[in-house]
Length: 345
Ligand SMILES: NC(=O)c1ccc[n+]([C@@H]2O[C@H](COP(=O)([O-])OP(=O)(O)OC[C@H]3O[C@@H](n4cnc5c(N)ncnc54)[C@H](OP(=O)(O)O)[C@@H]3O)[C@@H](O)[C@H]2O)c1
Figure (tube, rainbow, N blue to C red):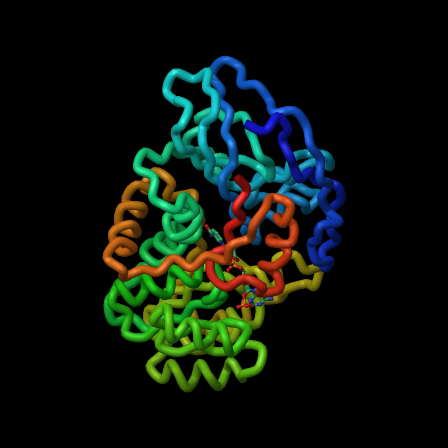
């Protein structure tokens, strides 16, 4: 076992419109910590960067994400790893653990249960590779699953629109929508290559390049009968435009708003919100952790679809803890295709 614990610590806060980068973190190394009574030591195998992690460097308390991190703190982030040493009666060396491991090789953990952000799980039947538990069987899969089933109340025959479709959540959600019997599933993403991938590999009916195509016209073309369900991770102009094309009794499930989340521009909106009235539609926020007590259900269903070959896990694999800052930054520039996973050990 290595005798040092490499870590990324918070070194600086990015301003509201500033892209996050390596410069906001300090790379340090310290001794591997010793667990006290009731604790155990976990060696990180994989971490996943997600857009919400940028919020930990916001220099203010975020109502959504829990407290932001002080300068000098180990960067927070969820991961999967192996228990190396334990002073807790229910956790044994060799067992696989998912939780808030932080951007580091080793962490001291306790079974915190269902606390928001710090929810933990022991994986009793690990899938190979372990990274699947950070992908379709992890946060991306769970968010797509509960976002569509609970946030969006998906029904067979729905015409579905998904933004950030080629990202982690979107790449799983489009497939789940298809499995649940959607009539059509249209994705929105940033390049023609990603559009082709959505249609050819993931079973999306069609895809719109929001950077080069006229979104308004394309939505009118693809949804002559209206959008029944919109799973939105982007907000801003994409949300405003989609609201114009809702079908009667449409459901808009809000999972994120990456286009404006870290911007200082005042956001007035949503535009076209009156269509919620005209179409007796509803807009519903959802957070994956709210369904943590139903996680076994999601894992069982998603594993079954994966084993049957109905669901593809697409990893955007980053090698090495040292590349975590670049991996997080890449989510804001669309560098990833599929679920970003960082292999640490
Ligand atoms: N509610 C929940 O429980 C929950 C849980 C996890 C994640 N989320 C949210 O779900 C969303 C996706 O998360 P993820 O972890 O799966 O990340 P991701 O989709 O893998 O990465 C983010 C993607 O967003 C797109 N994007 C970035 N900036 C954009 C912009 N200005 N306009 C349009 N698209 C933009 C990029 O793809 P393109 O190439 O298409 O631009 C990028 O790949 C995020 O908003 C996140 O906060 C919510």
